[in-house]
Image (cartoon, rainbow, N blue to C red; front, side, top):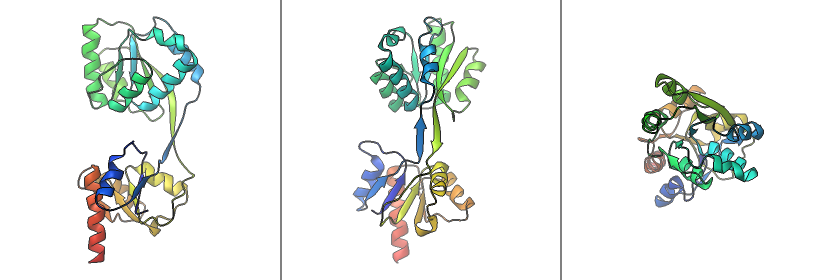
Length: 243
């Protein structure tokens, strides 16, 4: 194994493919874990018929929590089929569709743009009751702050918790560790992985600086946060070290 990608894999995964195109083998290693505590609280909110105008979900994990509640209580789904369900990104949209609901705003791209979309629909549909935001413990303030500024009432229910893994074991023969966020660094340090035994790559300058902050130097930094740029950066670093 040439490269371990410290991230969850897609299927198919564009990063794994980019490395294969350049003759390297790569595998993914998730560095975060997700828990879904207190599902009863979410079920109470979803069962509050008429209390909310719609839902907001900004991650597939929130959609997973929603789907679990619907699987346990299928009748609750009917309460939401005619209300707007706002999402960020295609993955969250797909997860909402799998829950039997129709997503709105998946083309917004980020939470700030979604706030604008929500404001438009709020006026267009003459909504009045609060929206219910299904969030995680590490959520940012963009949605609550933006909606408050727009005068749109919001209720929030934390439905999942994100934590750093502490049990990572790397396969034998790995040469490169590729970091996509500071969470990867935290997880490997918590798992007592000896980072100086590997060559380190970063998806961008922010993550590269985090590596330097712990006294290490990344051997490769992608010019842009894309699969091809990361793969090229690692290949170039290999070629330079062999020259």
